[in-house]
Each structure stands twice: as structure tokens, then as C-alpha cells.
Length: 476
Image (tube, rainbow, N blue to C red; front, side):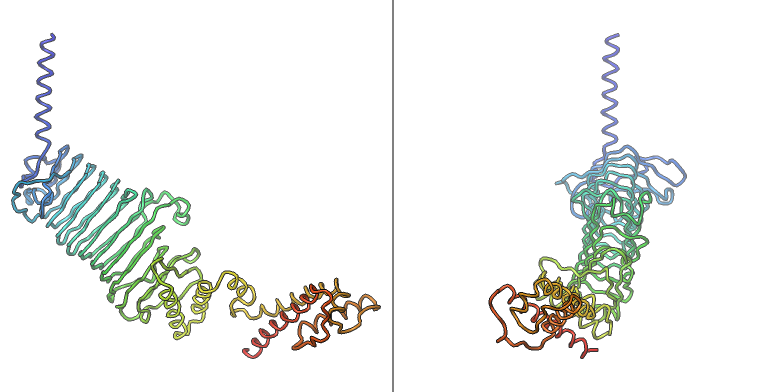
């Protein structure tokens, strides 16, 4: 009995070893998928429970090593497979140009290189770490419900259609794209993570933002969505209508040193922050606008040609700048916007920008006092209200210290009168001091200095009020 058990154990180990050897494929030359897979439906080839190791050499990708009869199979499915790479010193046969419809589903992908292919590739519900796509043409690449993404690199691709749906990135995960032309770029965020996409020397002909998490309230996403979605376009040509079916939460879109084509449409940006920096080439009258009307939206326009940008400045829009911006650059940005709105006759936009500029250049105290005094000149009627308030305050002060004030500046005799007449005389005394153009300083008695200061304060503040009142009268 014991001997039989030992024999069976040895046989099982041998079978397991053979199975592992069969299921682990080291790709260093083209292989036929028909030999390692099976047809599970008419026209569908299934490869499952395989381990693929791809040689990490120049111009060598995973799909370049695969062949299958296209006249027999329309789609190839990889399910429950593992993908990784190995460094090879072997001479790899020049990879073939491959095309087809590939679906990678529920797989573990530590690194998957794609080079010089076309067709359709869908990676769904997989544990995806690193994906590299280079030198492709007319490729439709779709990522759906993948997780733990560390890095996606897209380089030197032409006429690519890229769709990212409900994928979760690691905290430091990112998408890096360079020298690629997109006929479509579709992005939909997922509540599990944010997305950091950096475009360099790319051409964008279509951009669509979607909402994919229907379980949460769209209007209250700030209460639960804590991640950032940052899209940086550097040295790119933008010729797309940026279409947002829903708002991308906590999102920043940066256009740095970009050029814009005639098909650009940025008038319905459903984002939290828009940065246009060092951009000079625009088509005639490109429109910029924000969907958000109730929450604050940040806008940065630095060293860019504003002449062909058409937009209205809304109350919820705030101009912002980065730490790298000098004071001169910030001041010029404000001034250029003010000149633009003044030239276009947009008084409301001019006012909103001017108020933010004053808040930037003035000290906190000056800005606060100027705001409550007459709202930086945009509500001059407030001067009359403050004049009346100050006059009443000084009246009650003089009423309480009538004897000391009369001794300090003996203008009239108010003692010995009945109460109503006494109040009237104190008010006239206050009115005279407050609205006097000049006072006779020879009458001023310096017996009690604090009342001298009180008298001079009333006189000088009154002069200040009269200056603004005369300014209002002559202006209107």
C-alpha cells in the first residue's frame, strides 16, 4: 500500500511538472495560438491558464510573436493568464507586423509590451501593472475595469483610438503619452482612484470625458471623491471638441505651449481647473467656458495670446497662478485681461477681474477697507451710508462728552438748554466739525489731548467723506 502511494505521488509530481512546462511559454519566436488554445465558439479562439514570458528587447512586443488563421478565428481571448517579461541576450527574430482582435480578460499582467501592431486590443478586469504601446498604427486599445495600474506608456503611435473605462491607478500611477496621434481619446473616471495623464508632442483630434460610477450622486461628488484627475498637454496640437457627458471631479486640465486647430471647442469644460500657459497659436475666436456655475472654478492664463480667446468672466471663476510665475507675469496676466474686457466692452467681466487684481496687489487691510468703504469704486453709494453712520457715531460721542468737546473747540454755548434743543445743538456742532472745509486751529485748546485727537479725527474723517461724495457727484 505504501509503495503504491509513493508511486502515485511520483506520477503526480511528474504530471504537474509537465503541465507547468506546457503552460509556461517563453516567447522568443513566433508561435501558433491555434496549437495552445481551443475553439470555444465558432470564430473564437480561447487561450487560458497560460504563463507568457516576453523577451524584453527593442521592437519586440507580445502580439508580434503570435500567429493564428484569421480566416478561421475572428477574435482571440486570453483568460486567466499571466504576462511578464525577461531580459534576453538571445537574437530575437525580427517581429512581424501583427493585426487582429485580442481580448485579455481576468489576467495578471506585470508588464505587457505592444509594438508595431494594429487592430483591436481589449484588456478587461485584469490586474495590470505596466503597459507599453509603441509604433502602432490604427490601433483601438481599450482598458476596462482594470486595477492597480502603475504606468501606461504610449509612444510613437498613429491614428490611435484609446478608451479608459473604470480603471483604478495606484497612488503614483500615471499615463505617459508622446508623439502619438489620437483619433479618439475617451476617459471615464472611477471612484477608486484618480488619473495623471501627461501628453507630450501629441495630436488630439477627439476627447470625451464620461461618468461611469452611477452608484454615487453626481451633484455631491465632492463629498466622496477625494482623488485628483490631472491632464497635462505639453507641446501638443489640439484639434478636438472636448466633450464631457458628466463632470470630471477634482480635475485639472493644463495646456502648455500648445497649438489649437479650427475644431477646438472648450466652451463647456466640466472641470475644476483650466490652465492655458505659453500658448500663442489659436484659431479665430476660440471659446472657453465652464459648466460649473455654483462652485469655484480656477483659471490660469499665463503668457498666452488672449486676442482670439472669447469668454465671459463669471463670479465663480478665480484666476490662479503657480509658484513659478513671477510677480511681473502675474501682473501682466491681470492687465492683459483687463485691457481685453475693456476693449470688448464687457463691464461685468472687467469688474470681476479688477476686483481679483486689487485683492492680489493690495494688502489685506487696504483691500478689506476699500471693499467695505465703497467696494473698490463699484458701489460708490456706500460712501453715503458710511458718512451717515460715522456722523451718528460722532454725534453720540459728542453728546456724551459735550462739556469736554466744547472746552477743546469752543464753537458755541450749548449749556443750559432744554434736552431737545441741547441734542439739536450737539448735532449741529458735530455736523459743523464733520463737514467743515477748514477750522480755526487758534481756538483749539490742548487741555485734554484725547479730546484734541477726537476733534481732529472727526474733522479729517469728514474731509475724507466729502472727497468721495464730491467724486461721486462730479462722476454721475
